[in-house]
Length: 51
Image 1 (tube, helix red, strand yellow):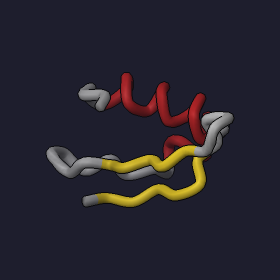
Image 2 (tube, helix red, strand yellow):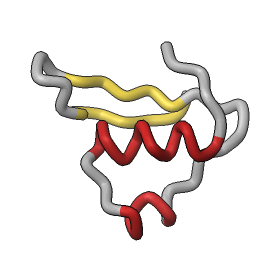
Image 3 (cartoon, helix red, strand yellow):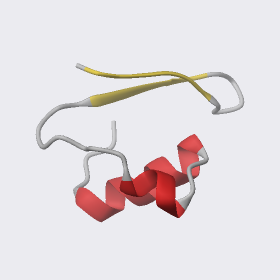
């Protein structure tokens, strides 16, 4: 589990999901809603959803 806020989460998502700076600006990160990232053995995101 990773708990962070705002820009820290955006930086992590950019790396993990291979997003560009323009793509990450379009991502909405709701406050207090957990984002689940399911990854494979090579840490590639295979599924992403909010609880």
